[in-house]
Length: 432
Image 1 (cartoon, rainbow, N blue to C red):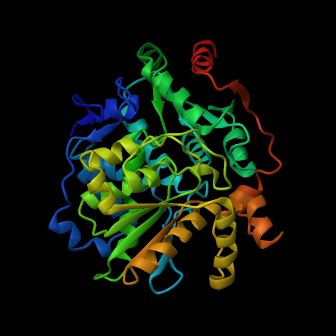
Image 2: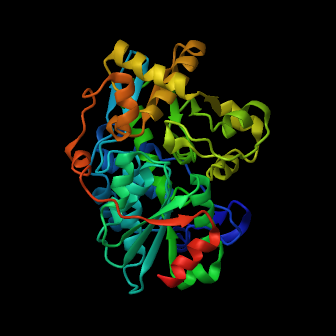
Image 3: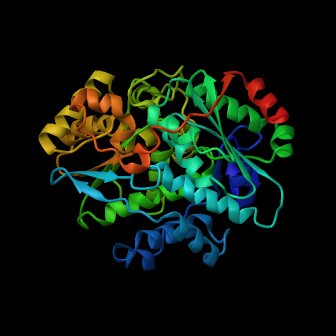
C-alpha cells in the first residue's frame, strides 16, 4: 500500500513516510492509493465480534499489508480499550457517545492509535520524534495523554489563547515531561497555518524529525472509521442510516466517508457547523471560500479553513454535484445551540455538550425531511469539558464532572506565549 498527495497523484510514498512526515512537501494531504470494500467474510460476522476486532479488520483493509497483521492487531488492541455506545433518544434518533476514552473526547480513538502506530514505525530508529499539533479543543488533550512519557517523542501543542475551555486547557498544559504547550495569540487557523508552515519547510522538518498529530495525518482518520461500523451494527439490519456530525476540521466526516467506501451502508451524512459555515455554504452554492474563524461556544468547531476538505473533494472526484448528493450541510448560531441544550435535557433527560447540540439541531431538520431513516448524532466530548456554558443553561451543580477532569482544576497551567507568526514557531524549534 502506498499513499499519494491530493495535490499530486503521481507523488507516492510508503506508510512510514505518510505517517511520520504527515504532510507532503506540496502542501497536499496523503490518501491511500486505493480503497477496496471489505470482503463478504467480514460482513458475515461483523455484528458479533468485538469493537477492537472490527477495528483491526477495517485498518487491515485500509492499510493493505503495509503493517503486518500481528503488529496491526496489537496496535488496535492497545489503543481501543473503551467503548463507543449507542444511546437511543427516540426510535429513530440515536447518540453515538465517543467520549469514553481517557480524555473524554472522540480524539482518543485517533490519538491512541496514532501514538502506537508511530512507535511501531520508528521502533528501529534511535532519533527523537517531534510531534507538532494544533488544537481548537480536544485534540491537544488527547494527543498529550496518548504520547505522555512515550520514549523518543517530544510533543509541542499549539492552541489559541482564550480559544479552548478551561478544563481543555488544563488537559494539555499540566502534564509536563515531554509535553510542551504553546499559547498562540491568535486563532486555531493561525495555529494550523504555523504547523503546516513548519512541515513545508523540509529542512526544518527533517532536521527535527517533525510529525503531526492533527487530522492532516492519515493515521488519525483510520481509527475514527471504527466507530461508524460500531454504530451501524447496533441498529436494525434493514435500517437506512444517516450520520449527523458536528464538524470543524472535517476529519470526523472524512473518516465516515472512508467507512462508506469500505462498504458500510450509510445513506447520508449531515455536516453540522456553528457560525464557521464554509462547507455548508459550499454545499449550497459550489463556492468554497475559507474565512477567518469565528469564536463560538462550540469552540472545537471554530475552523475557517478546514484541512480535510481536500480529502472530501478527492473522495468525490472533485465533484460538487457528487458531494452534495451524499453530504448535506447546515449551520447554527450560539443562541440556537444553547436552546437545544436545554430542550434535549428537558425532553429526553439527556445532557449534550455544545458541539453535540449543534448536531442535534441538524438532526431535527433532517428528520423532518426523511422521517424513515435512523439518524445517528456523533457526540464528540463529555459535557463537563464545557462547564461554564453547560451550567449557564442547565444550572450550577447539575453537570457531573468525572474525577479525571475534576482533579485537574487545582493543577498549575504551564504554557509558553507566542505570537501568531510562522517564523516564531520555526525559531522556537531551532532554539529550544
